Length: 449
Image 1 (cartoon, one colour):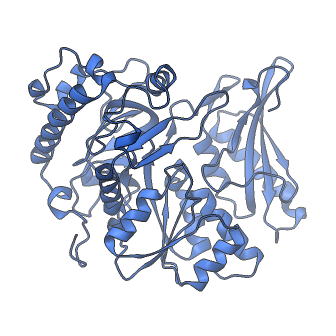
Image 2 (cartoon, rainbow, N blue to C red; image 1 turned 90 degrees about the vertical axis):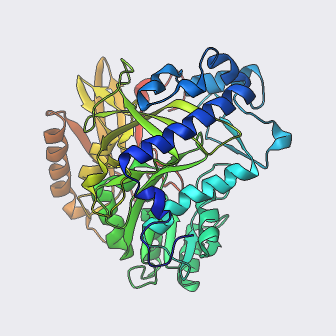
């Protein structure tokens, strides 16, 4: 455990010079590749002919095959319930977590051993400590504690650091807000969307979050945590600093975090993962400073080794020197920018949910919003549905509508957005990951959207 005065959870590895950091990564890569080839049926086939000891530099990563989510899911279907990726079966694991399945598909199932969970908590500790949380804090984790992996690792990291934990599962939003106040929580963890939802609920019941003891809000689960406009709104509503993190079920924990210096991006925990950025079409490496798909190799999950996993996340890697905190861990500028497949094309124009949210969150009058893409005859159309905050007069709507319409068109090559007013409470609210973009062109004929 780090000394209380240190800004680093693991000072030795977080500040390693680049050559030594890469040497550490390669040593872990050789060991993990050998482990996977010996113990995972899937990797035993995939790594046939690969000599782990011959992996000497990061360029040698290209000798290893990539893994996709489809590979994982197909393996589960062929050898239920866990597939052939795991090195253990249910008897050797202590926990199972699942992703939220897409329509018509079963969820991804991930097993973990006791050692894996210790590793998951360790990586979360980098983030928790790095944003300034200390043993004297009281943390409220606004999370459902179900099979979704979510903030489980953060919960154990808080315990590891010595923070008093308040698990906020199985409650209404109002009850959670009141507990945050009653217990004097100094740290709150939630998705960005739910942080906004908690603030809405507090305001509706006359509860002053800005005057509460909360000083830090830890965000995860959505790219919105790294959108400056959304983060600024959360910080204004809570009177606290907001910090972005990102992880995934496939890894079992987080892989990036925003430090207390808040450099406009998230540090990659590179002593525990190797993160490549590739062109999603050619699969060739992309230079720093250019956006591409992130491919992750993680070293701490022994139950399910992960070598060169294509995540579908859109990122832009920049050097650690962008931040003045002293870490030598590279940065994803803007955090996770979204999904490679998030982009929608409407009448030849690229539309990104992140860009829409950045515009909408500039307007304090907006309480909630939803983007709907649909087909009218043979023509694609796009609308933005907006709910106003309770205190905003509907008489202000025409002016706001026109401003949003103009800003959206300017950011999208003149594309005409239909900006529409929704009734109070008509749009969905989210506790976990928000889905504010609905593409009705993808709905099969005769099905409900």
